[in-house]
Length: 393
Image (cartoon, rainbow, N blue to C red; front, side):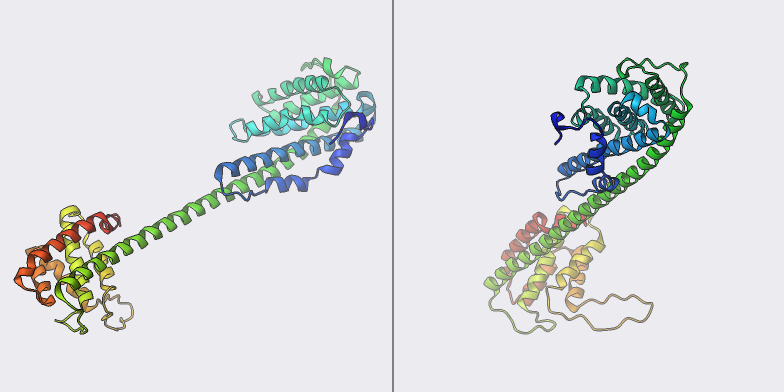
């Protein structure tokens, strides 16, 4: 940190810039990526780094402009004194950047804040009194910002700055300047201003290329995060859907086991296992629930659900290779049976299906009411659990 009492009488601003500032540092600030994933905090960090980059660029551009002026008129440096000339340079440099950006840009306010910070920043590196720094910069900002209302902003900026330098070279005090369009100007200062604006414009383009690239990267990262979240959410919901189906099957299996006795070991047509019959029962209950709550459910969706149920039964899918250029979808015996259940249900309702399953379970007529009640409970459970997900699909 700089203290006025210890500053050398000359060159402290340029020494500071040479030691602390570089265009590489500016690029790094504009390419900075916060580690936080919080979007609001991330934006604050990026804006802070961007503002710091602009403040550094003002210092670098000010020294570059000072060097141009010193090369064409060393007497100007002696006449004005180095600190006051550097203050003119940093006021002009920051104004060229500020007025070179579209006023409708979201970065415009950030540029305004960074330019206003020049007063306190320059005060830390100067022997000029704070009030004088504030008066001079305020006067120059008002003069240069007229550029936004002109047809050729860059031309106006160069002309206005050249007139400021011309007045200072004639011995006019920095705080007493009254710039008028008809006042004579030194052509050397106009050419120096134009040379500087060319340099500053190129640096500004480089800065905004990096700003735009970072914003594009941020948008892509946000989109990727949204997609990942959507995929994760979709996967969680799908897992929940399948878990609910499995729970329904287990509940039905327990009911059938309690009601109709031990599990059968055979798994042949006409003598299915109790677990497979549980899957058939869940299929029937779901058909009942669809008719009650989701009558508009697409047939393809129901077929997909039926195939998902068939994967809960023994694998009896025929192993047949399809011919080239022909798509054939084979289904297992169990899936085929459930498709047939759907057709019967659409033509004749639930009772023929229930009685057919009772026969396979070895049940009697007296078991029908208990089995029908279980189907009704299972249908209500399906409507409250996995059917809404199925309907959304």
